[in-house]
Amino acid sequence: MGVISVIGLEKSYGDIFALRGVDLDVGAGEIFGVIGPDGAGKSTLLRILATLLLPDAGSARIRGLDVVSDYELIRRDVGYMPGRFSLYSDLSVEENLRFFATLFSTTVEENYHLVSDIYRQLEPFSKRRAAALSGGMKQKLALCCALIHAPSLLILDEPTTGVDPVSRREFWDMLGRLRERGITILVSTPYMDEAGRCDRVALMREGRFIGIDTPAGLVSGFGRRLWTVRGSDMFALLSDLRANPAIDTCFAFGDVHHVTLRDEEYTKRMLEEYLRHKGHAGVSVDDTPPTVEDYYLDRGRAEA
Image 1 (cartoon, rainbow, N blue to C red):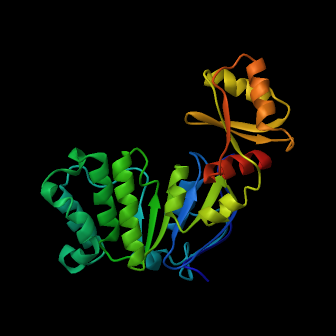
Image 2 (spheres, helix red, strand yellow):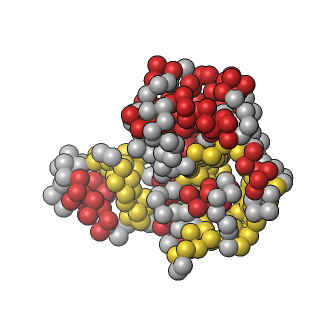
């Protein structure tokens, strides 16, 4: 049995199903990512595992302890960081950290070694109210407060949402160092590019997992030829690509469109000629390796 074991977990809010029979196992020392868009069910799953919500059906255990009947024991060993900044805005950085240490009958001094790498970046602002911190600094303070009681499991709900790219990268670097200390980390994110920072990921859509594997394992399971297509008018290009009967899927990816085929005998030259006939200029078609996001879109479409 892993650190986290979930079997058939279900949760609904009235007529809205947030979780539809979710199964999950997370091993010791993993960074495990739950990845999906808003409304996929990520926060509901993590809140149940953090003993903040009751499931409607199924079971969930943390190190063999049931999240319903053993919630008090679980809370002693879990650090939880919610999606919204939930520390005390009127308290200073230092006061927030000392308050959370007191909640778990410990002190900052006793466990400072656990947060020292992160807290050193906050020390120049230790007397500043939490409300006056930047987004990245709020994130670091919340992580320190989640760690100060020496948990063996961190549950982080979309910790990098709304944070600048530099702070996102720094945060994931911090998670990597925490994993090296043996801390197991369950983290949710809507950013597909963050999948590569996880040991394994579960892709979530409408309350279900549509794929669980290493990022490389998911990509290797894509199993289809993938092209990038560019042109001078990308909006019109998207419409004309989707109207082509030889094309199965077409999605916008930044400054290119990603295309898969129904007809595997269809060639790049045939597609270029089709688009020129439609009046497109500056067309280029190239092979490209799939990403986790390509896998997610392809599986999500197949199961819709």
